[in-house]
Structures are given as structure tokens and as C-alpha cells.
Length: 164
Image (cartoon, helix red, strand yellow):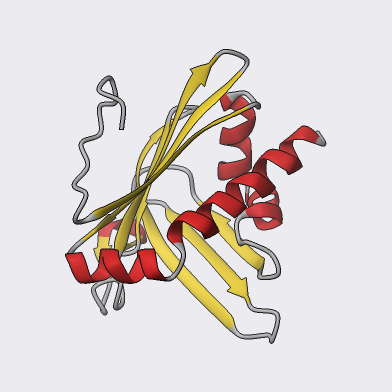
């Protein structure tokens, strides 16, 4: 993690994906914050995101429904915590919209997601951070393929944006 980065991370609790992509922050932001765009790239193929709802304000909803190739659906509903257009999007599954605590505490692996965008030449320095409650949840998320999955999704985002 670069020293100029304002977000402090803990290697035991947080997973970080940081890359430079050759598309501008404004387009990465559109891909992250427009449900119809997000549905096209958010879930690594062959999975699909079949539904998405985003109310882009603190306390608003961030909800996705992912579908496996076999048809199993996995819904994730969370609360947006912070919105700084073209720079920072933060949400958590530990809260529901309106900052209501999730009845299940966010499930067996609750995390807060931070998407940080910085201009970098003609492109974007893209940082995704998954902040976990405990080491077990972090290890579980990493074992599920955080880096490969979030990296593949980012590749899909970049490919989609380049077609605009």
C-alpha cells in the first residue's frame, strides 16, 4: 500500500487489490455506480450479476444478486457509508440501508468494501479493500479467491468501459 494512501490497512484483517488500469476514474466510477453497468462486470464469469440496486448516498442501499452457472442465487444487501464521486465508494454488509444493523450481523463473513480511485496518467490507480471483523473472516474471504475474483471482475470492468 502506498504511503500517500489515506486508508490504513491491517494485513491480518484486510484484503487489498491495487492496480493501475488504463481507463479514467470517471468511467470506472460510472461502472461502479450505475446498476445496469455493474451487472455486466461485477461477478467473475461464468457467474452473473442478475440484479443490482444502488442508492448512491450515505445510508443508501448497495444490493446485488449473483447467479452461479447452476442457477444458485446469492443476494448481498448492504449500506453505503461514503460517496465521494470519482474517488471513493464505501459500503458494508454489516448494516442494512438506513444504517440499520443487519439481523445476522452481516452473515458469516461480514466486510466493509472500499473502492478508491485516483487519477494516474491517462488511467486510474484502483484500490479495492475488503475490511473484515476478524482474522477468520479475512482468511475465509481470501480462501474463496478474493484476489483472483476481484481481479477478474476488474478486468471485466475495464473491458466493458473500453467498449463505450
